Amino acid sequence: MHYFFERTDFLWQLGLYSLLFGIYYVTIIKESVRLEFWKGVLLAISLRLLLIPVLPVLSDDYFRFIFDGQLLLNGINPYLYLPEDSMNMIGGLEGDPYWQQLLEEMNSTPYFSVYPPLHQVFFGLAALGGEQLLINVIILRFVIIFFEVLTFYFLYRILKQDGQSIHALWLYAFNPLVILELSGNLHFEGIVLCGLLLSVWMWQKQQAWESSLAWIFAVGVKLSPLIIGPFWLKAWKSKVLYIFFGIGFLGFSLMFFPLLVGNGFEGFFDSLRLYQKSFEFNASFYYIIRNVWEAIVGYNPIVYLGPTLSIFTLIAILVFTYHWKMKNMQDLAEGMVWIYLIYLLLQPVVHPWYLIPAFGLSVLTQNRLLLVWTAMVFLSYSAYMEEDVREKPLLLILEYGTLFMFFYRMYLQRFAKKIFKYT
Image 1: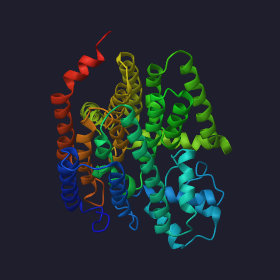
Image 2: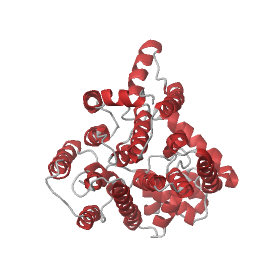
Image 3: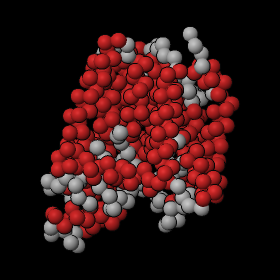
């Protein structure tokens, strides 16, 4: 896909993705191929290494990643200055093809960086490769693949400790969306998942401070794992709970302390608010509410609807957490999966890679809803068939219609029984 197609070649990409998912279904989901641990891991790594020498096609986020990393190497805080202003501060970059490409190709020139400080560390590592875009990309790929290997290991340990087959590991390792979005498009949700899995594994071993640090590591890469914060209140008991959140608070404070330098937190949170109030992509319930609202009042309510849905998401997560019964690791992992589903279904922006932390957790359970979604979410890339991003309503209906049909037929009854079972 990365070797042969442009971003606008959606039909060819969809055909190839469907073929790959078909092979994945026959060999992995249906278990027609059995793999020993190390053979499976080596094969999974090899598939990822095939993407090493190519630039991402389906996402342009990596331009901002590398740009921020170069700013750090030049001593400039990416939370204090907009991209164009930052280049002017460095000086002597007018007409420089490398810097001009980064600036022109990134999709976020009007706002400050929205990536947390720990995330920026990886950008800085990529920038150590100098002003050579492909070298920067290769460094990022090796970092992501390294954490993928750790993810395989943590999945293996959790499954073994829980007495499950390692087949669930292959559901993750060979999923086409996972390979495409992490090693291919250079997204960091795999590193987020790595931290979450380590946190779950440490919970299995009842090691509170290690579990807390792993969770906060995931938060340090992307803020989204904060949504499972209330769920940990159910997972830990008595004094251990205070240790978990005490360590978590300390780790969070240290990780986000760089935002206080020069009031960088203002630029960071301004950009987050802009993101929440300005962007929409591949949403479900948000689009339904937006369209009804627009029909009534005659304008797009995103400025109000985005923050309102965030509040509603928090309330829904708290209610869910209160009712969820947790007795073992599978209950813990499945509860996290449902929390992610609540979050994703109520967001105005759902890029395909957003699914990966929830999908990785779901393979520890019998919940296969995220597996279905990883098959269907590629349809959202149809929005890039033209130069201007235009989503295709019929394909959105197909994506979410399939998802909700699967939920209705396979999970609704069991979910209702579990969440409202008072014992």
